[in-house]
Length: 344
Image (cartoon, rainbow, N blue to C red):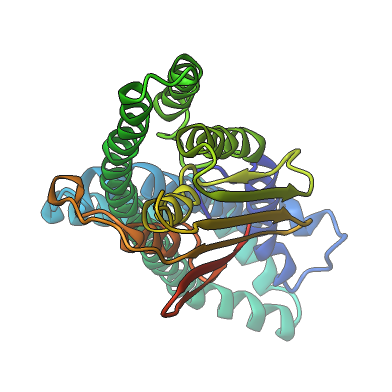
């Protein structure tokens, strides 16, 4: 149960709960007396109060008192509520119940036994129901609270990881445009325009937990095109995308670090460089394969950000637990990443 449960589920549950006294009544189910006798009316009022207690406890009392550690106030409210449910309905119908019992006691032995049994078991029945509702709502609400706390923790960790992604992306992309500006490339204005659109996406969309897949693919395509402009003819870059993106979503920027890694470690103007990127989308899954040849390059300490593939692995574990498979092949002369994500 949660606070978004459809209203009809609540109504059906309440109706079934109110029917319990009639279902277990010794009187015929379709008889008028089963619904109109004083004991049935008292049960209806008692069960209605139990329903009110259920909702009050779940939606207000537990949050207001139990989670705030106001245990004494909470215990007093529970005691008063229990006494109200036990005593109030019987007081309301006391005269009618007394008359009804006297009339039954003059009837057959079986009916006398049933009413006498009901008389002695009412107290235990209401106490059992009250305790069941109390501990049931506590268990459900505490479990929901734990899930909320876990989700808040995951959201905080994801926000931290994304906060690392954005400056990392900007740093690397600005370096790419700086390289174009140094050689006075005619592609520099185009690269700046692409960077502008990519930054707009990062600012407006990347903070969301999920984004439309088509927007993410446009972003990745822009990044690859920007790298092609920077590299010109110094590297072979093969990129392909197949599949339908309509009505599909994905966590933003979860794919990009694997592609960035290929361009970071697989490109050297003085060596044959090759990068292959293949992305395909099926009905339920997204597949990505990124391959690059390992080339010698100069390690610049100023470009080390402390951010890498480990960040992406953590994001996948947080966002897609048991819904992704990541395989990395780190060979002597090549590096390949294969990723499958269930996007349903």
